[in-house]
Image (cartoon, rainbow, N blue to C red; front, top):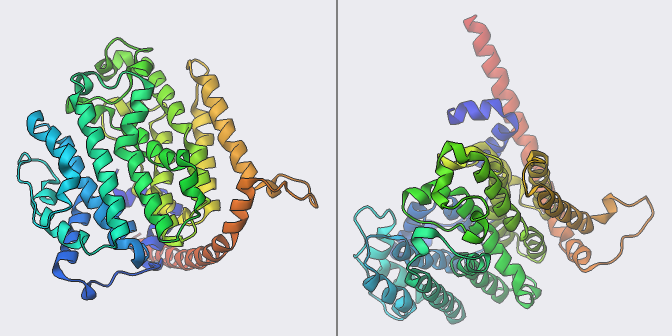
Length: 441
């Protein structure tokens, strides 16, 4: 189904698309006229590697915008080395382990990727990235270099495991550790940058489990969704400790006759991913800058929507699936407040629970984890569930939500005005369309 038809069949998503494209204003518009050629090229590289991340990074507060953009490009370059199966291990492993040292140089580049590697230009033009990296505050450079070192070492460790690409990871502990190296560390670095900029509560660094969960929730969701694509590339990331309960060979899920076992395995993996959801909501309640909140929240709401999409969906074994464009627009707009984020999580958690089948061996576990998330959301907004006149208990999460309430109130008013304008445009468009059709009849 075409994108236009999808939007027409989902009017709320159509309104969201109109609102996102024509009405919503950036909090911190980027002014290209003030940028040097190297910086502009860095943003072009950013857009060519990830349009979705580029959109939210460009709207960050100027204090962090360039730092996070360069952080993303450097890790994208590192990931491009790790992902490229054409690079010999004898070249790849030392390069990954020494990649952080390249940040001390000013003109290093790498042209050793295969010609079909889609993001190879980030490495070919890495000297442009280095040019801008050395302009960052020293404390921001230190964070980026430290995370690059840890991630490069972690990637090298897993490549040295000879069975990694053929059979996936052995245990859930290995799975968590891999996700930490490739995504949890990103959460670590971003959190350190946000706290250094005074855009987040210092408690973000006091509870490392929160920032680790931010990365693991995203990475595990991507790993579940990308099963078919990874199998085609000869890669595997699902832990045998989980998939081994349902089959003797991970590739068996590609066969239609093993569909039910595969869906049960996906349920198991979804439960594992959902165990990070409470930490994600806790983390987001501690972000104080609006643009940083948007940056952190958008990927998380996309992840919970994607988990619901893959849950009990046999298409996951035969094609690459993703949420609709209109749904993406809706999620981006609604996730600008903490209340909006919690409503999104609640909506998709309930959908997952509703889709769960009693024949699934994970049926009770699905119900338990969904209930736990719902209870936590209720503890964030207890006044909605208490009789009138009863004062909520001042729990830590309730105090955090109340502290953020003023920021949410202001943004909610902005959203309300945007939706009013979008409704007016949508209404006028529909009237014009009806009039045009009536003329043809």
